[in-house]
Image (tube, rainbow, N blue to C red; front, side):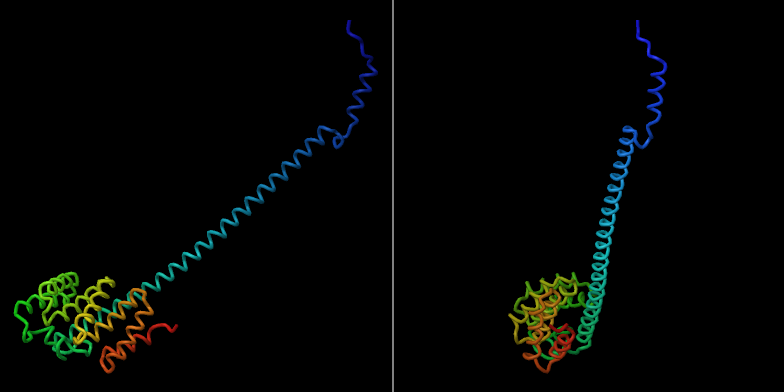
Length: 253
């Protein structure tokens, strides 16, 4: 038989439990503490995410600034290259035009003399076949067909290496390579004129263009030295005048 709890005792116990305030209830206190800790963790996580996001934004903004700087540099370099190419075409057209009309190329004259006869007409000691092969390559150069001109001059030099027109062919081969931006081949061509035909009328222009080709390849010190050599070795020529003008255009050290 179960013991009978007096009604008075039950009433006292119930009254005792009901009298505990919520802020002193151990369970409620524990729950409140957990809520506070969770809120703190959430704030920390949120703050860390914002810091990371801000860092990423700063990094991306820095990369964008760098890219904009690179774009500006590329645009400026492209403008300079476009101007250089325009000046080159104009200069080449001017010199070829002078030869077509019997004038001298660049003031230094054609090989073997001061007139443009060796480029536009016949010359004593040159066979009609040589003149024809050379003329076809030169006509391609005047027409702006530089790849055809390169093949033509290369073929001429291979077939007639000792021809009186060989210095001219070597020089114009270098010009065609330069216009095609094959600077390494152009440098070799202009150097070949100086090595094989140092007394040629094309030598001053070859040295001038050699210096410009070296500059185009980023060989600044070597290019400057070559241009200075033009001004002293060929003083008084149009090539020397143009070399001096080119040196003044270069940025100072």
